[in-house]
Image (cartoon, rainbow, N blue to C red; front, side):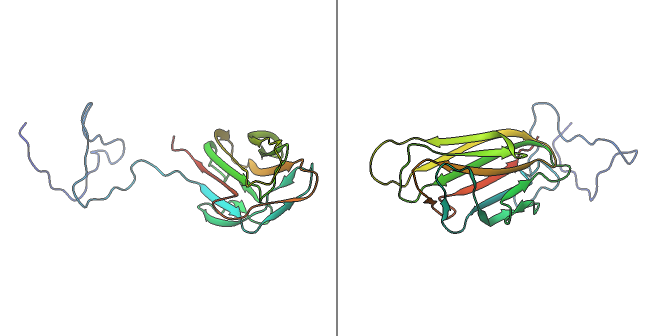
Length: 185
């Protein structure tokens, strides 16, 4: 068959339902310059990104929920800035990429860590920084993971330190944040 141009307004199957195949094995289907795609691939949603809007004091030797109260985005409106928890939306179970970072505000502790809990039990993700030096530091504890979550699962972040007194964690979207997105499967 010779190369040529096919100009049509609509392509449908002869039966009105089923699969339409473009190209064959070892071929690439390309869009022309300026053309846009619709319905191809997918989106890494639902997704959210929240951060600590103002420094938060953390009591010594106490697991404390981090008060992520400022959202950058939340595609499914599933992050609650009052409870600081994210609930997997109905029909959106699957594999999720989770990222967390907690930054101390100019102090050190022999133990400074966080954990992401699923349904208030069992850590999905942990991060820890141990420092026995003297002096004060802006220590950052980041971590990320891929996890399987079901619709209705609730995730949130606890932070802990044993510095000996109440200490603040640093606010700001580049310092103390929590985010996740569903992977395209």
